[in-house]
Image 1 (cartoon, rainbow over the protein chains, first blue to last red):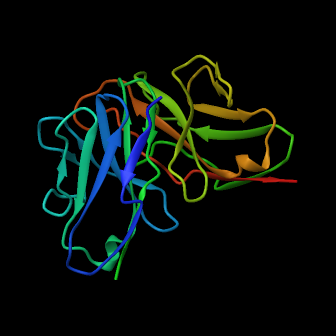
Image 2: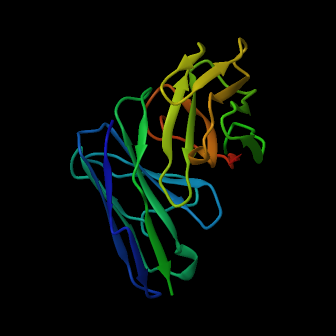
Length: 114
Length: 114
């Protein structure tokens, strides 16, 4: 199994600022994904973090708002840019090996925007 | 959109088997059935997955019907700690671009009662 660590675990931010969330995996993985979970809701996929190339975004999510980096096989960042209160959510990193294997999740980063 | 249908909630008595149904009538031949659960304020936890054969591990059993249009997750002896939201997900077999990720539906909220 893979252990996924996210930083920060929680933060309170001001409207208009940006926050970068880090995701560190304890082993090399082929796939990394970023999800958002709004209060009382299920998880929504934001994007696939591709190593060495631009992330693949799902409908409704754009690179200018959620830039993603993945410099190697164990690390990725998600930035939430120009934040508004509607961005208050839990952001989760997911990673795994192989397309038919398990995907593991971090504990999430709880973001509150005032 | 999620390709599965689950009851929104279920109750189970502690020590009894919890049987969680899932309908995935539009599943295609190259899609696996995955189950995850999310305990309050934690990241989703992988439980089990399968393609067409029944599967069992230390946490649960997965029963997939012969036509693969539905499945049942079985927790053989439910405990209070099994209270969580359980997600049934179909996942594409072939990885490329946005394939290989997990698309979450609303899940089933399982309440295990003493």
